[in-house]
Image (cartoon, rainbow, N blue to C red; front, side):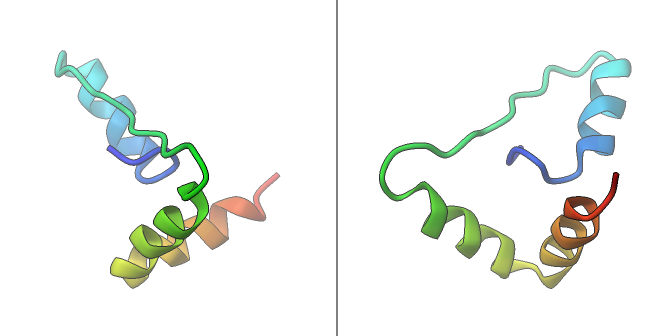
Length: 55
């Protein structure tokens, strides 16, 4: 799963005993890739924005 997306689901799956891998893009092109993935689903973008401003 992509880092920062559906952390609640990641934790739930782990509690249920499923193996979960978190994908973290890196390298020179990490930012364009991350933005593209967020833009693929508007719900992901909204989720990112709301969690970015949480304390």
